[in-house]
Image (cartoon, rainbow, N blue to C red; front, side, top):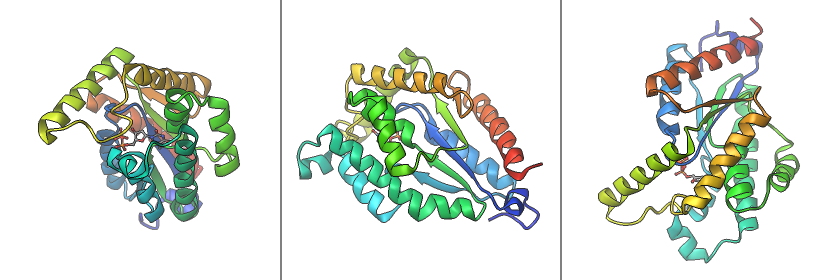
Length: 235
Ligand code: TYD
């Protein structure tokens, strides 16, 4: 936690930030850089990933993300996949996110409901309406203060994802074990298009970035987070 002079803590209200993007979009690097920057401001962030981060969530992750998990349970029906993503999310909101925000913490979550809309809604074809209806029912429509969407042009993103898979094969001598990264190009393009549509629909919440160097993207993220911190602290 930050010092006593910390304006966010004084205001007693935290900040909820999420990171989104297709696999290989550079989220992990940017989450790390933002966390480092927040620490220089005396704000120790609560870092989370979805699915995961709670005991229940990590078990759900083992089933949903790791294809070896699927081998243990058999083929996962798309609606079961959607329900499990939201079971993970509900647990994380109750166990970590809400309590941390009530303490005035900055919560940074690697993926949230936009991922379900993109991957299950568009990728698996379940639809945005259904996904958002589940979000309302299970998460009380609880949305982040800011979502950083790392979405380069579709062809560039696809190229990066391909390279990532090749590197994985070279290093691990086998296909990627992430069930989603093993999906084909058509799936990837549906995910990409859904993310672009979300950014257009909710420009206030979603900051779409993607073209530019790692440093340029990091600077743009810091600028937006800085503005949200000011709003959150009321200064
Ligand atoms: P992960 O290894 O964390 O991927 P990345 O590093 O790209 O974030 O795996 C998480 C996978 O889960 C990712 O491929 C997207 C998928 N996912 C969904 O399909 N729906 C969801 O609601 C969430 C949170 C993740």
